[in-house]
Image (tube, rainbow, N blue to C red; front, side, top):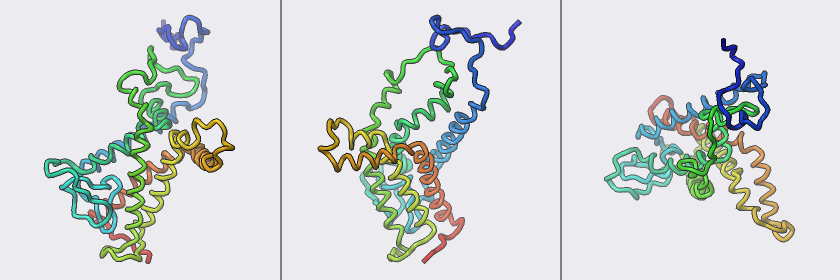
Length: 273
């Protein structure tokens, strides 16, 4: 009769023949499953929301705000906008939402991010689900095969994320105008955009690739004082990379949702001055 404490019927990984035989799957007594469950729920919520907004193709512009999901707008079917770059690079043949042309870059940057890899590997694939908890997979190949080998292009997505962050900075500057595009305006949306762009830059610059680009492969920091100083600053941000990853994910969704509410007529943007 099974007692529920029998060792799993596998002979690889932590249950290999050369490892100590321990009957339970793990010895943890805390709620180890809570962190990966919350991670999976948070990421899934963002995936559902961003997918809905990306395919909605509507309510992404409310003067002077343009949703960060749709900026820069690169299709001919973009709404007439005076806020943010609106480059009709793609002709009339593009009939889908213009957000699909630009979201691939910031999403690719996040998907290949070292922290997000850990988050969704644990949250969705249970590889492993938590520290000191054996993963259920019998075989581990790492990131050496398709599609996970694509994780290695994270640095190139970092290069693509920089101009996107710069464009969102430009959008934030334009948010200091009123609905008639006159300067001197500051609404609640302006504050939402300001907080968002600060968090976007903090997350982007805290990237491990950014830290390596600035200070990697230097034999003597004393010969590169400027890069050393920058490397130190980025290192401090890098220590908060996980927190910045989450708060910037929330802020960019909040900025888009705020534009949606104003554009759909749910409420008027409160003017602060």
